[in-house]
Length: 111
Length: 115
Image (cartoon, rainbow over all chains, first blue to last red; front, side):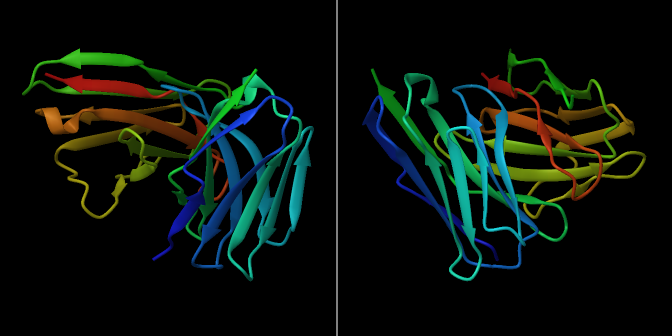
């Protein structure tokens, strides 16, 4: 059974610092991996999607890497801003199209 | 594009009542819709997968007679929590996709509180 772990569970940084969020998984037979953002009491916003054949994806200040062999993905957020404060979730898509989520990393960026 | 609307956003009701939550894809046809539940400080857990016109497939441990799912059209799926009890209080989120392995687009969730 796939297990998805996100470390740390919570992170607080001053504005301007770079953020590094980690996601690990136990089964490398994945279809793709996604990073989502969730604001309090809200649904999910997709940030980046990495296909299983890819190593990384970039969008603006965000960069996500994928290493299937070691079962790891890392989300980098450059020059953090208070508006980046949210919970970040990684999720793996299996061959059936189902998403399995990690528990998330709660990020607070202080002005 | 790919907007998913979920309604209501928040509902409070008495124990024993049934609650219906709607999930609509506003600008695309959703062949597959998913229903998730999220408890505080925990991750999203998949409850069931529904394909338009077919019976929903429930995850292990999810009571299909308690959580009724209908996906009668390509733009609408409903989740009905029957005879709700306080332990059913949670955040319910739906997602919709154009196919089983296509990207999922999420609604804003429904906060359900059972008194």
